Length: 307
Image 1 (cartoon, rainbow, N blue to C red):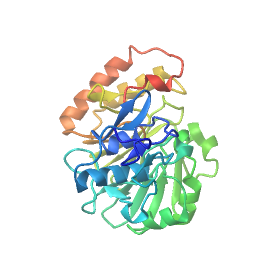
Image 2: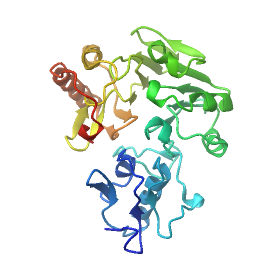
Image 3: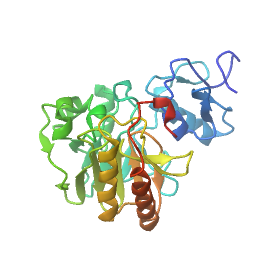
Image 4: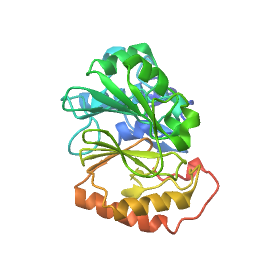
């Protein structure tokens, strides 16, 4: 195992909060050991080294450390297109959805995304850490018209990014205290059209104002409402970290299953990403809705999440 104490190679330092981001980006190289991430083995080729670079540049606590301890900005791969086959990320191509990286400690290390539109503009779904230099990197991919917040936990940098991009900031009324100066406020539980092909679907449960953003019958940005679990190899809810109501979340899932929500890509804030055919994704969502109806409120326990 590569550690600082060994005097060489990659390691994870003691600031790790076990947020799972590095394990998503460097599977097989970074894993969970004793309740936090650890480097399981050193990279064997350039592709594996690139995965560790991505993990290091995404880590919200900067705990993933390269040989020598200092990150090289020239090897920052973000924003990084998603791979069309696996749901992981690569450094190639332009991509319709790009992973922002640079996860923020002020959003509990949540993933954020750039959704590119046919006219060359983009929408940012949730936000990475804030800096003017990062904003310039994302803006270089095309004008950003909207910053879409999935819920209150991920709102920390929304206003700064929206102002920098001259974009509209969106949030649901149930979580408006987290972005009181939002430009657009979603209400109730009915879907709202954001732009051609992009829909906001209020999804109360994880928080009162949680929202799914759906694009082109292909992409589902689920915030913290549900995610892909590597442990169970299925779609799951973080029922041990539900701030509002697990029963409301079950009701939201039932509505989505009844409406036969269509998407191929599950793109959450926390937890892993997954790309599956429409029919399989819909079937798994129906199964999740059925399982969620049996869940009951429980104390918040971050350690119980099945990544």
